[in-house]
Image (tube, rainbow, N blue to C red; front, side, top):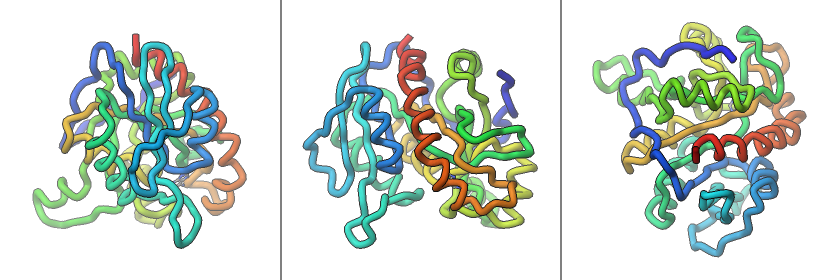
Length: 256
Ligand code: ADE
């Protein structure tokens, strides 16, 4: 599979992958994404007190896996999606759950102009906040938080071949839709996917000195005329199943 872009211009980098990871903390934003992964890996609910966040745990091969999700909002009864919840929940979990690797899996928007299709898989080389605009030197880089994730090029290429995935920029923002300026930004940066958590998780991993790998499945095409929320809801179950299928092989690759 081709590798897209090269993460030039990333201002931050996460620690390299551990040679032989033993404990993985797997973050997923929505219960619809978490359930098929828990089934695929045979994970069981854990009673760890982490507020509204949910933890399921178990062993797969040589790895102990804790699957973390932000849980359901008590007021609105929907998943607590978005970068702020992601960062808060991961930071809290890292203080309680020992791990030597963080993995983020989930759904995301893709790009028709990049030749992507629904349920395609993307591995993140780098991530940033595409909706952070600060015209002040230094602050712009801090706010955008452009971060190179932990897998080196050879490992990304090996994982991409094993998973039939593409490798590239996964861009994070607080919105499901995209403005015209953001669409121009994605095209300029050759973004392969757009979602609502990864750059926030990367920031927390940087603060905690943890390596991070991320895999996304495409539910909607950001540069297509159909509104993202309609395609997203129609394709959520199918793409979540595809992501769940890819998680075992991804963990196998990371453990070898
Ligand atoms: N998750 C799935 N599709 C998305 C999109 N288009 N934007 C942000 N997050 C998403």
